[in-house]
Image (cartoon, rainbow, N blue to C red; front, side, top):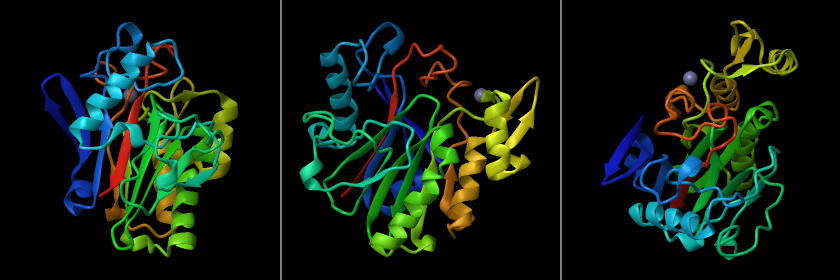
Length: 265
Ligand SMILES: [Zn+2]
């Protein structure tokens, strides 16, 4: 279950099932508790936009201090709606925040090293968390509609299995706040792609088709052997909660981003 925590103005989610393992520091951020203004109000974590760089860095420090992560060590990738997965290590700390962004084609990050905080971003796209509680491996993925069709979530699990000997029954996964089927209207071409890849169960016919990305992702996770009870779905729609969360659709793209952050202790 995703639990909203409040500390002064700052609000963020933690995941009970992940918290309970005691293995990681983690969160999913909201709009609240930062210093940015206007469409970036207030906890904007989007690096390459016309928000003030100093405010963005302050926002990182605010949320990372709260969860006891060193914000200057964060590792993130450019996120280009690919299915490229990068295995990060300590030498990558700071990539994209205090060092130049060298991961310019990756949308998912894995690490088995402690003290390497990973982050992925979204403002409607689906953030995915993975934690192998036995082998102590973590991963985060950014699964927008293209990444969902490319099965990036499934590919992260397969990579954890192949390269870190993870067993699916030991992998805890979470599907973070993102645009849900209530608001994710798509054109016929995109609906057709989802129909072909996942079947009609991920579509709802309203005036136009709506796509259920979270269901398409659950199907991928179940398909590679993750037990249903190891999948925590936030059930939170960014568009429906746009006072609390940034939503690309709701704001016609005038928005900041939230981050999923996770670090092995
Ligand atoms: Zn909605």
